Image (tube, rainbow, N blue to C red; front, side, top):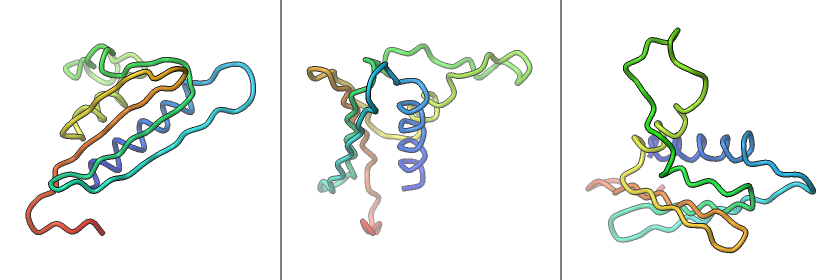
Length: 108
């Protein structure tokens, strides 16, 4: 579950750092569900519209000196989860992350 934890942390950091809009503070809601063979996490926010599935892939072939700032968080999210879905519902972003559970793994 460390991979899912990393993806969740990266996504929340992106919402906080880049999703701001003028006005009062926004909100983030998370729902966790244990499915028969996967852990599902839904993250809903009222930040600016952003679909991470449409973000360009990070060029991991560049050296650290050549690499522009940013973009690795989304790369880490994509590599850390088994399934990733996005939709915009009204004024809210909804990102769903799923990781398959392996045999013998407990939810706790």
